[in-house]
Length: 191
Image (cartoon, rainbow, N blue to C red; front, side, top):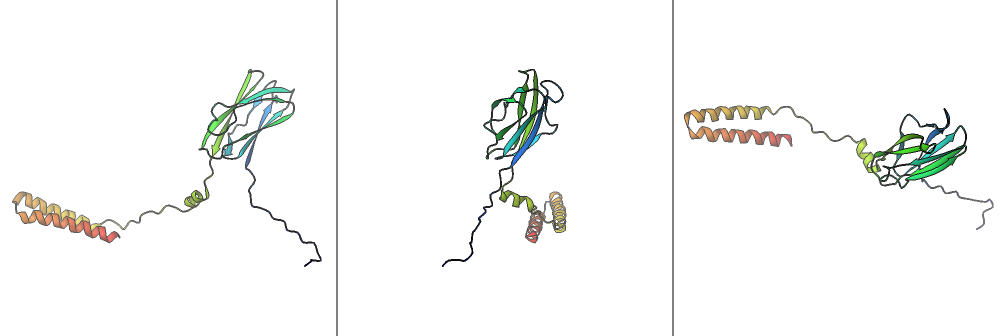
């Protein structure tokens, strides 16, 4: 069978793009070898890519980006860069990591200037954990005070006190039976 019109099918998969976080750091903006990091921390999700964009506003500069406490989040350790206008440094985070933070130290002027960018690592909850977060936990329902148990406790105390002073054995046994019956009644009433 031959169709008279061309027929094409475009299949699109529902693969979300890799999440990326862009942070800008300005170099030489307020003076020679100055480094201006953002005032707020950079936030990045495990398994995504952190892009650090170095924007140079002056003469070309040699910088070093290094981390000393990022081993549990990424394989990135050290990078030397020569920035003329702009350079983007990509730091990929591991897919399996715990929430936390690490610092990226930026050094310019052969050690004369140093700035630190704090990166907070966030773990996205899985779909099962998201469903659990949406449903509030089941709270036990209060049925009010068990008045019968309190009455049984009071009656048992009176019977036991009377037995203690009179030494009539029947009162001791009656006090025990009253407490057991009151506890069982409250127990089976709640279910």
